[in-house]
Image 1 (tube, rainbow, N blue to C red):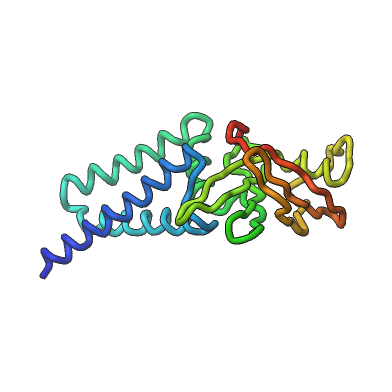
Image 2: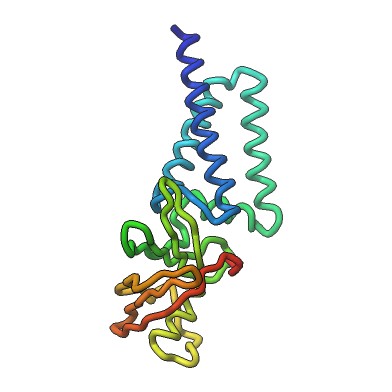
Amino acid sequence: MLKNFHRTLTISYLSITLLFLLGVLMTFYDYSYFGYYTDKIVNWLWSVVTLIMIIRFWKTKAGKIYFFSLQSFLLFSVLPMGIPFFGILYYFTTIGDYQQISLNNEYRIERTKQQALSVIRIYVYKRSGIFEKNICRPVYTEIIRNVLNAERIKNSFNEKNISIQDAKLVSVDNDSIAIEYQILGKKKLIYHKIKNDDGY
């Protein structure tokens, strides 16, 4: 009975770990699981089950090696100015995610800052089955300038505090996606070029 429990727990952990690693790998190619919270749920589920596995197998040599390997990885991620650590923190949490808007069943946008040193961008996601792909990520400040027809933004201007009141998908083709934004009561249609070589 106990042997079957260990086997089930190990298989479950390996399955969750595979989902977690696939999620991490997909981020390098601008893909993720469909939905805003899906990645976060997988990440935290993996964290909780990892803790359970470490506690369960703590008396074994492999359990201790695994625990200290994870701890070392986390420690070393803090050393280079903390950039990798904050990348992990942003990936696991909602820090830096300011707004999510569903355009339709296929497209959604996020107003987000995905890394500690990043500027705030609008991430446009396109659904593909249980996955979604980031097809473009324009800088949010430029969108605000466009909508408000402002040449310059004052030093006191903080784009974190300026929400998108509404966003509507107008058209999509192979090269661009047209979204009508409403910000501070003003509306404007903006065409974003579909590409993935923008920064983060």
